[in-house]
Length: 282
Ligand code: PAF
Image 1: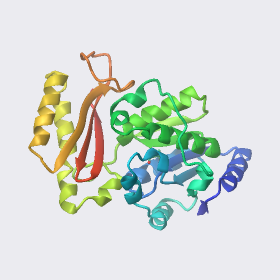
Image 2: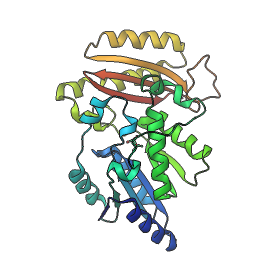
Image 3: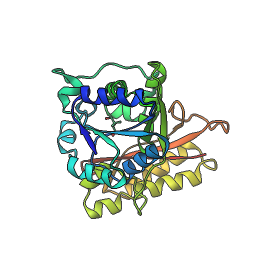
């Protein structure tokens, strides 16, 4: 398996693949790979000739330095996991200087308002950091298809907008959320939960499932009040936000319009670990 650290080596490889008319699938990650990532890699392998997986903990998308420092870095284990699926994958694992040079800072993006919803309200500058790194990676990898999990649904919509606004020639594919047996959405942050916290965190998905059942029979306001009350009964999880929003522009629901698609979104803390999840409602 090839593990590249330098962008010039990656670009050279990409040029060779393009010359050979090979299609390139791309799975950007920050490492600490779990089954959710592996399912994206499998999907990429099943539809593209060659797959590039980037492993890079992107500093500019962390508004909280403590979170950045504690983010798990497990390159050797990640590589072993990928090898079990395929030895043919190219891993791109650059140091920050390859991606940012001497200045580790984000570019400013407008994502037509998507960036101001939900995560954008609580994570200042986060989507500028994501936009900066994903655009740079897309320019280096030149993928035909790029695969993103729906767990970060707002990120997925933002990447689609990035591609549209910057005329990037890549198909962005959203892949279903991968869940633990308990229902908890797979996330690299789950590794930092104690076994008990991990079990309790499954509550987030239980609530989302109940929201889905109630949607259409109760108003969004009633559902929202109910969710807030439910979280009060679970003090080890602190609700940051609950939203029902339009699945395309992520604007919070005003009045249900049956012709539109909606999703429910939750962000909650278990101790200092921030967890997010969402569900399609109709
Ligand atoms: O979803 C992630 O892991 C990151 O936000 C991404 C897309 C790899 C950019 O750093």
